[in-house]
Length: 305
Image 1: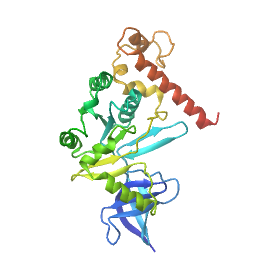
Image 2: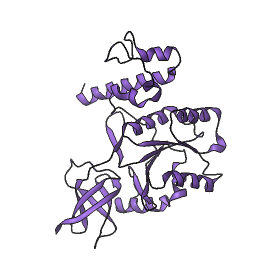
Image 3: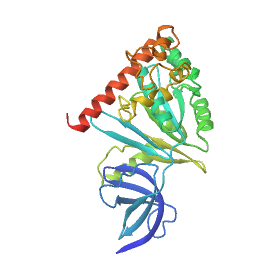
Image 4: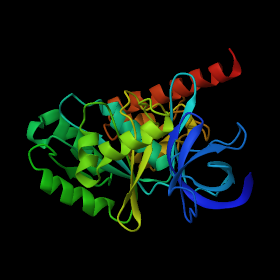
């Protein structure tokens, strides 16, 4: 039997085409109920506010309420939405295993392109080396707030610093495997227990990994966990807009000779001039070129070439 007035709720987790939704007013349903979307074109993600109907003991997601933002990452073949309605992106990295500098750069770009405030979190400060400290100083120079923590050796101090930054905000945590992201999250919420419960429900008894998981934090905040992944692809970003989100590129005041300059080999390029005189690091310029090439390759794949 279908009830068109099951109400609105928040998507807490995703398992393929099945979801866990926390209804604002659950009534006779569980506070966190199983749900499926109406049709295959409805792209629902963790953090979405949704409107639902009820069919027996199952919720049906009928529509997605307007989003404040939506964070994506891309891989070689397609683009994946991570979460919606996020206030802050906590980018976790550590000295061991050695962090990929590009991962941090890419996550910062993704945050800024989605109008999400970035937060750089260095874990395992007791193992910090010169290269890791240099990366954190570089990020701080771009007006990104930074936290220096050690979840293993100073858990209480780490919890206090994280809680202060996350209070009243919806914070999505991302990081490569092994950086201690889950350990940091478990200082704030019992994420391991809740993740296991959600996974068992979403897979009907089989353990599974969700794309992202929502945990309430305080009266108005939330923490969103994501699985560790190796790369943060950005092929979904328009290359001609990259400079807007790269602070040292955006700081170049002089205009290029040509309005449509790609900053490759065009004459009179102000960006390449900034690379030559050291205002833009060659490593960052090479990163910019790499993003252009990735987007071009993605475009060929999507067109079937």
